[in-house]
Length: 514
Image 1 (cartoon, rainbow, N blue to C red):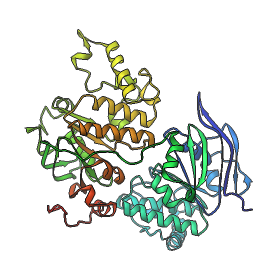
Image 2 (tube, one colour; image 1 turned 135 degrees about the horizontal axis):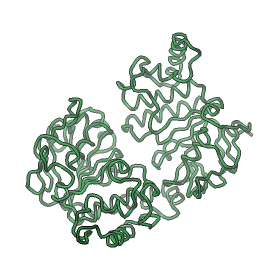
Image 3 (tube, rainbow, N blue to C red; image 1 turned 180 degrees about the vertical axis):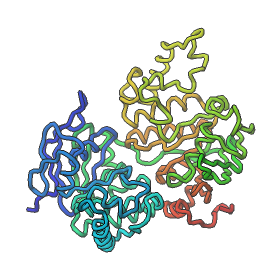
Image 4 (cartoon, one colour; image 1 turned 90 degrees about the vertical axis):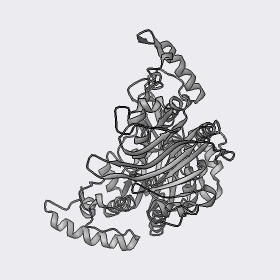
């Protein structure tokens, strides 16, 4: 029988009292694409970090092509033929593609021979695997899809025949994701072994041969992809049946809550990030903003949420919002009935060293309900936080734990509870399920729909097209700081939205000029 490309036996790893991996065994056959899925905190990243030499296992053995192998660090992993493409690319922005490829793998003190050799090898790799990219282009001048190709080329240049990809489509357009899948298929045809970590069940079903499911640090199942279904995988991940589609009734929009006209933002370097945005959101509807990260969605949320100044006109319930003066801040926005769930929960939504009960009132701490004379009423705040934690199923249900001790999904629930329970007229919500496991995704989607059905206006920003299509009542697509077009979910698909996200304009089906 063919030896596995990778075999892990009895891998265990603890961080203090937390068991991240518990006696995990897994076999990955050569020339296959093997998916690994699981909830946040299931131990997927820890397991792959052990395989790539970032962590040392407390117990267990690693076999590469049947040979027991010690992997104390990433250099040992590379020497064993393992390459890893991280979710956040490890590239030097002001270096060329060629310079990034050889960085750390130079053939001596003189760069010229190394660069010449790398240029020749790179050309061969590009042709063999259809990984076309200009070797002399600066990383900062190429898109994320091509940057990802550079990461793959880096691994192949180091003669990797086992590739680990961590959430590889998180920053890609649908067209770029399709191209990545074609590249992965080509690599598989050439005999490479690929481990794909993703939370997207559709991708698992589309591209993998075998899939392993992890839950709470243990391996719960390994199945052939052709013999399973998204519903079965979701149940294996979470331990219960999960509704994979958003269950909602048609929207019943009423009066306009948010009206934005000719909104512009220029950053500190003089670059215009928003170029005359106009849109509106009505009570009882969700307007989804689709787009690849970095095309102005963050600036839109920040201006509307009072975190950044802009020019133009923004009205909430018919009243003009100050965009540049002393009342242009988050506190004034909250007073006008605007709640904001920011895109980056750890940098903008929480103070990680503070407790859950403290985080549960940030921004609303001046509310008289939380005061006792000149002091804050901590006992009342803690009881209030307990209620939020219970209603939003935050785990563990301990308001005195610091935010950093919760998983990403539970941190997100904490921010959502704080903002949604203020009963806002307008909810700004950025990347609601980024890095969140499938069980928490289902819950978060239910809460957003419930708020819409209560007659609230919701502006939703997400890079997940599936999420945009399933949650939104209307969809606006952003590219390079502009609205490229507006669509109804029932009258569009991922392909058309992907074209708009890539800046390829099409005629607006609703008759408006894009």
